[in-house]
Every structure is written in structure tokens, then in C-alpha cells.
Image (cartoon, rainbow, N blue to C red; front, side, top):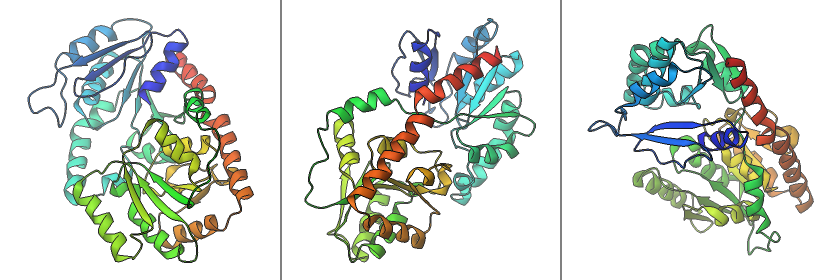
Length: 357
């Protein structure tokens, strides 16, 4: 999000500077500047950036600047909010779904720690922020209680179609496959609903020849072993393959080859995987918790993150003809072009930044 937004602004002649702790990797935006700050010892957890306060204080005194804070839980966001609020500088905050209720309540210790941090540090710091950015109308509803009386602006995350189409152009045609497959692509983490997908797949695939491919890095070795144990217990270990991390052309080949992509996250704001798969013309199953309310109208499938409902959706997908699969994929591609490309959302950012000046 930060990289693509920086690139878009710089491409429209707007000077961009990105300030970040040095533990974060990021490319320098075109015609822009990237400033990394050292962190305090043991700062890998909170990442307190040494020297950022002074830089922000100087910048906040200059005219013609808009500040944009991404995230809520780390020291750079807290520090920036405190400095910029006191200076009265025009500032946007993008929580990026970090205040979602599922994430708040995932584990008692984590929940208690977050609530203490929010009420004692984060909420007072963010009180003076000018605009709160939500990625979907659903996220706006979720954010409203945390920011009473604040202006909440909805602008979707976007996808760079020109970059993606270069990868797609390298795929000459959808090749004939030894077996059709459903693809999950993403980080192997409980929030992604992979256990739901495996259970639903085992329940629905019995009379169909489809395989399930799971691509992405493990969030932990223990969770990876848990998924493999689950697959064996359900008797589908010969039909499910873990591919590990994929990137570059390999990723786009998988999207294009898949019969459908399934991303049954417990919580997600849009989900870049959903947009990427749709752009390749591959239909996508995802959940109502993504906020993609327009998905079913364009040929995609939305389900609640429940095994039975997901199994019914997979059975429907398994029974598609090639023509129906292709039609749904093409409609999703058109939806992304109209609503989720940078051509669509970029002008919204320009208008919002301009309004703050």
C-alpha cells in the first residue's frame, strides 16, 4: 500500500518522503526520499525510532505538507501522532484493519495487552488526527466506535494493472493441466482460515477430481505441522500439496492455472490476493469479512467463514463448466479495473490530500 501510493503520487509530480524504522525494508519511491531511523536496543518489538521526533517537528512547521500514518500499534505511529497532533498538522491515519475485532480477541493475553495499550497510549495520541482512512465501508463501521466524531474516509486498496499485465502477458495461454486445482495463496496463519478450507475441501471433493494447492510461507513451524496433521486425519494428504513461498512469475502462473482461488480469511480488508487473482481472470471465493460487497455481482463468491458454507461453495465451483468459470473470471477482471485499479482510486487520494491543504 505504502509503496504503490508513493509511486502514484510521485508519478503525478508530488514530492514524497517515507519515514520508517530501519528494521523495515522498503524501496525508495520514484523521485522521492526514504529515511530510515535506528531503533532503540530491544526495539524490534515496538521499534522506537531515534531521531524521528525531531524530523517530524521540523516538517510539521512547513506549509504545504500532508502527513499520512500507516498502522496503529508501533512506536513510529504513536510518536508521529503525538507530534503532528500537537502541531496541528494535516494528518491521515490508515489503521489497515489492525483494529478488527477478530484480531483484538484472538487470545486472552493479546487482547488484554492491546486494550491497555490502546486506552493508555494509542487513543490519546490519535485524538488529534484530521482524517481516519478506512479501506471498505465495513471497516468504516468497525472504526467508528474508536474514533467518535472523526471524519472517516473510505478509499479502497488498489492494484497496479500495468505491472500485473506484464506478468500476465508472459503467460501465453492457460495450459492444459494434469489435474484441476483450487489455490490458496498467502501467509499460513490462523487468521487466513486455512483450517476451514481444508475441512471444507475434504467434505466436498469426494466425487470430484480437484486438488488443493496451498502456497505461502508458514507463520510458525508449529502451525504448519498442525495443518499437515489435519490433512492426514481427514484422509486427503494425497490430494493436498504445500508449495511453500511463491513469488514473481511463478505466482502469476499459479493464479492463471487455478480453476479458482479460495481465500477464506476470518478478517481481511479486500485482500490483495483476491484482486490479483481476479485480474488474471480466475474466479475467487472469499469471505463476507473482506468487505468486498460487490464481489457476488461480478461473478465472485462470498461466504461466511464456516466449514459448511464454504463446502457448499466449493461444490458449486467444482460443478462449473469451463465457460462459466471463464465468464466469472472475466467479470471479476472488469470489476477490478473499474473500482480497484490505481486509475480508479488514485484520483480519490489526490482529492483527499488536496482537501486537507
